[in-house]
Image (cartoon, rainbow, N blue to C red; front, side, top):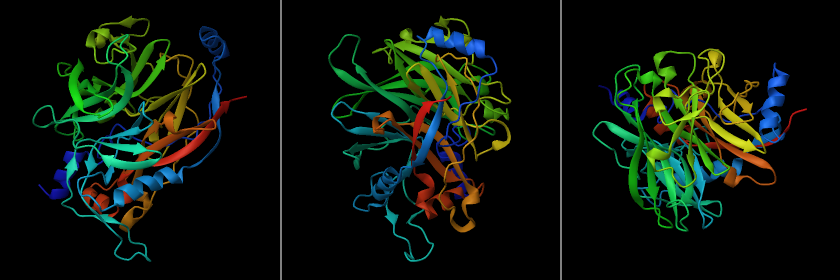
Length: 423
């Protein structure tokens, strides 16, 4: 098997979640709902403060994008982060920010061979690749990479991808805090599962302040569900409200050539993310212990739906979801939805947005994808919201060579936007 094909299967070439995690930062424009009465009912259930939101303005967040480029290009060490996707972040109690990544390149980045020309910084093709990593930021500056991979493979031919995380009490009522990290477990598989077969959702517990992995607990196994496209992995995004942590997830419908994937939601009492018995799943009408009865809250496999790495943010009583566009938009467009409750109904989709992309190396930007929109509330300020999106090569042959030949292709990029009520 050619090295680039082997690397593509190992990394997901989307190297993380390109099949199901697609698409990028968002300019949100809420669509008017066709059922005004339903909207009014939703609003009353949330104290009357749920209203559609739109983006008043947006701009690129060059400082953040440049900081990841600076850190990745620094050749001082050869065992730290030089590129990755699956970008999630968490504010720690001491002011630091913990950044979590899925498949990650370590090693050394070399300067452009022709700095005055169009050449790019590059990474040697022998650079180490690990399934996950964590990078620490203080005062806006990335300072170190924790020993990588942070979360070891659970078994041969399986791996863990970290997604959303929260700081919460070690146990309900405890004054001691820990970090809980949601993990997706995937296993090697045959086509169409070249990006891994969804296997389980886990929760890792990290100590504070040293960020040492104490334990990993499986909260939902999916191995016995015969159709992998119906297996749901939870943790792409978390929302807290009224003593509950709402945990969103998605299925792998796209891998089975469906038009789009579906979104699901579970909830857990605050402080009990690592307790499988505390999880409850929305079945379309009530919360149930039975995960197999979970029903989608968004997605009709045609016009509406999500990539499994969508993100949700709350503004007052309104929830706004950022995701890939369904249908023929492919890897180029992002859209959004809004709701008055985590369980919906979700209104939309809004108009599409196409995020700025870096050059694609020898053949240009037309072979570059943007995917995995994630909000970072701890980085916002002055009413602005920060969103990241991952970028990657779309080459089906030689993808790893393109990623290594132009390191900007496998690093997060950022935008800021201002959400305001729609009129």
